[in-house]
Image 1: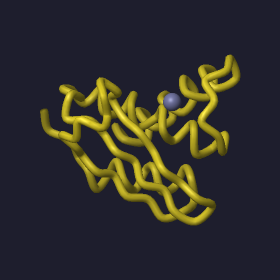
Image 2 (image 1 turned 45 degrees about the vertical axis):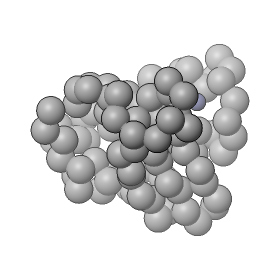
Image 3 (image 1 turned 180 degrees about the vertical axis):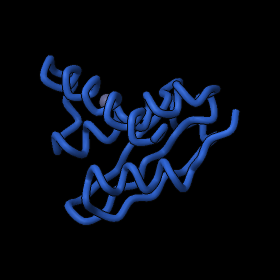
Image 4 (image 1 turned 30 degrees about the vertical axis):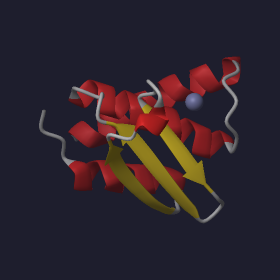
Length: 97
Ligand SMILES: [Zn+2]
């Protein structure tokens, strides 16, 4: 897979308006998750699992974590799933522009 990482980072930064890093990880700590995130109001570190095998999966996992940053919590309630979908649409659109 060929990911335009710099473009993806730019898209994410625009959406969350804070400093962001995106790291691809082989860590066992992800325990089967596609991704994880740590964030404060100023910084966010998105970790993507190396089990993301396609551009679609990378964008979906990134959108998941961006939705957590926007919602400012780690809940997976109904509102979250709607936000995740909306965020994925926006990211895909901007990424492919
Ligand atoms: Zn989550």
